Amino acid sequence: MRRLEKFQTVLEQLPGPVYRGTVTACSGQTLRVRGLERKLSAGDRCDILAQDGRRIASEVIGFDGASSLLMPFEAAEGIALGARVETQGTGASVKPHPGWIGRVVNGLGEPVDGKGPLPQGEIARRLRGVPPSPYSRRRLGQKLETGVRALNVFAPLCRGQRIGVFSGSGVGKSTLLSMLARGGGADVAVIGLIGERGREVQEFLQETLGAEGLKRAVMVVSTSDESPHMRRQATYLTLTVAEAFRDQGLQVVCLVDSITRFAMAQREIGLTAGEPPASKGYPPSVFSEMARLLERAGPGTERQGDITGIFTVLAEGDDHNDPIADAARSILDGHIVLERAIAERGRFPAIDILKSVSRALPACHTPEEEAICREARRYLAAFEEMRELIQLGAYKAGADPFVDRAIELEPALEAFLAQKADCRASLEESFAELGKLLGHAGAAGLPEEEAAAELVPPHEPALTHELPPELLADLRAMEEDGGIVIEEPIMKEACP
Image (tube, rainbow, N blue to C red; front, side, top):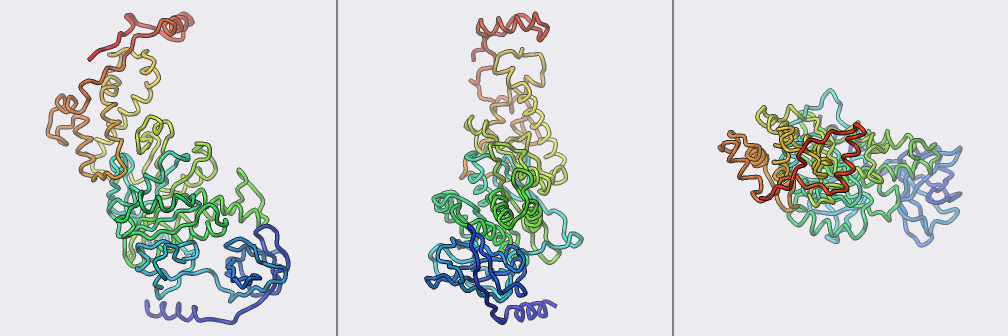
């Protein structure tokens, strides 16, 4: 059966007749072409002959009466009225090859790293692939070694899972992405940098990912100055390359930074093609294309590997409830939320544990691991709930023993969640360290008192302060109004 499929694919790739048309109008990045109305379908690839002899690749994005609407993958400079358009009436396709590992390509599958031509595989793959049937897909596999302590414990990643990294700009999502790319558990990583700043490409390659990380990765790059069509194409290519390795039985980690820029590119294309704007100016095609794209990642069938998808979502204005973030959250199998307030405190990665969710839980944890995870989350939640009162000095020690314990553990928990970008932690190390921190004798072989004394900094002052007179007066006034009750005495600062 495989030989027959391969033979059919080869037959489909044989060159067919070339059809020709002409450019009749140009408006922005949209070209109107006549003469090909019965030969083209949406998504077909065409070549436009510019006045300087260049062949500019373009794609059919729609139709208007007898005219075909084309959008080029680069600037429209040099395309004149009456320019010749040629097509074979076929969609965009690429031929991924294992020799692409360690290379950097653009959205058209062309090398941009100066290392020579790319080897080509035997089978051409359409860029808009179809995900496996949901009835033939496997379930999520075993846990992956992410290398990040916070994720290993609180938001674990399993083979075939799709998870989103939600973050505002400049909060560290690209750095976290590089830590995940260098993590173990996958045979190859396919990384798509979509709409990135041009200067950041080399920075990501040389510093963030590094030479060791690139040795088992394929990078697809489309910078912010390229056309929306090229940015969208680069996203499709990233998933297509990942699917090629998956079909060879490999475990693939597919990282896309960011899915928001893909949605913005699709918005530009949709509005240009005449779609009506909907939520925040996004036309309906944006959400349907997002669902089709994200569903391509996930578990494979019995004869395939898996694609573990990690997609960053850029929260505009730190709004984690914008339409793109909402749509991505509803499709993905979990979300990791990076908070600017945590980054401003100097803790990286700035993961908000209480807002981050992995839908692989609790099934992927053992009962002992789940107990440690739940207990630590309860302490974090208790401290966060009382954070303002603690910082004001209005919390009275002894009022709630559980909150007292949360206050005692907070410095050690923050130290556990912080991690340098070049540091890796295994699953076993992560749970052993957190179990020791919480005083689980089974995790560290220590009684609770010794474990707590060993991990809580000995010179950490208690989180109690003498209240300034003006604040004390305000609190007294609130007490008289019935808002709060102050118990005497007001706590004094505790010295080590």
